[in-house]
Image (cartoon, one colour):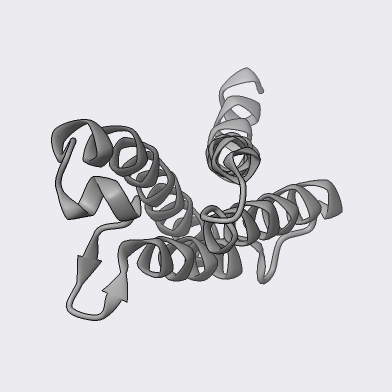
Length: 131
């Protein structure tokens, strides 16, 4: 039962990290229009870009959500989405397509974590109630 609970925490953190990244990517350029933040497209905490913080948060969440997972499909979805998400954030300044790819990767991370929550927490409870 403890493993199911830890999957849930990782999934909630992964969903939160992906949603915050989407909000950040949509709002920061709009709010900082004309400033140096909008000109560079990245917000920084000290010398570190928030993009790397989002990659770290989502990487840790995917690791803990999949480390003992039985479903290969969920594992492939989450790790593939993380790869798309990470590469797109790192290469976002090179071409506009990477910005859109980042939104896709973030959306896939959210979907993957929601599927994982369903498999690990909701589906087992539904089976118990129907018996």
